[in-house]
Image (cartoon, rainbow, N blue to C red; front, side, top):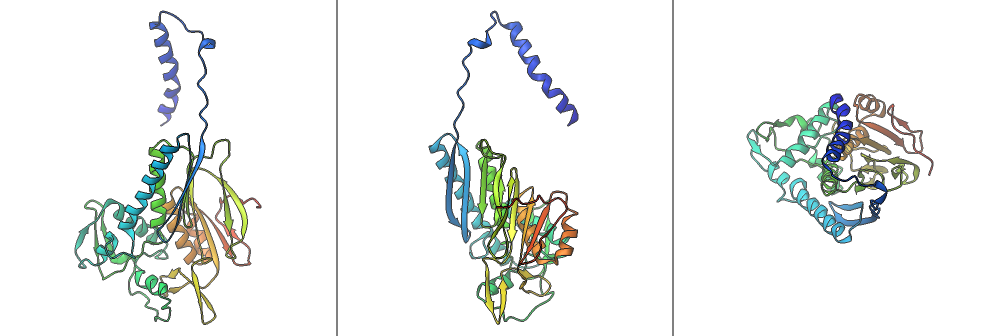
Length: 337
């Protein structure tokens, strides 16, 4: 890398010298008209998908191109939903969960990538992030929270992955829920499409998952609000070329017997988390930010901070309800709104 960085500046001067030697007439730079500056316009597109709203924002100079590109992005969301959804019986994920146990099953690259990352983070958090809680999350959706706890009934270790063969083996009957990681992956996929199309400045938001490219023209970054469990903006961050996610119970919960039952399931008890806490993570990809936000939200805060500080590309902010915040070592200080 060092050699490349030293030699790259020499390429352009040498090329110019070569061209000048072959030219019969030198051109006065003052006579060459300057290229007009391209005026980029902000384009915003929103559609309902994945049980939430998918927002895409980017800057470009061609309206027809922008519209066509947005349609390509939303089609990718539809395609990914057909892979990852646990609401659909015909999704690849649901079909995998219906396969015989103790047999390896070939899966798509997309599904293997997401499950492999999920299992990796599960191992790093001692199972605080666990995609095998599908039975419990489906019970929560039906508000069937009176189901007795089933400690140890299933966990991420009941998935066996073979990276070389791209196969997954279920060691027990499992219901897999990728709700804590798939939206982040899909946001990354959309950003990949935008970048491949030559877009430099863009932002993608799917629910609580956000991925950002370069800052908007003339700006230092994208201004992102940080919310507490009471749905109040307590500060803003100016970010670019990164991803972030927020996990909490501000929007997905129900109350029963005087307790607030969040959609977040503790793998240890197989029950809803009842403490009010938002965790915002910053990571290199939205998939990582998504999964880590869920894992850190489930763990006790002190333990979560210790684990997060060991991850070189991860920062996290912990915002309890009506209490002081805490964070990892290098989480940026939010600016007052």
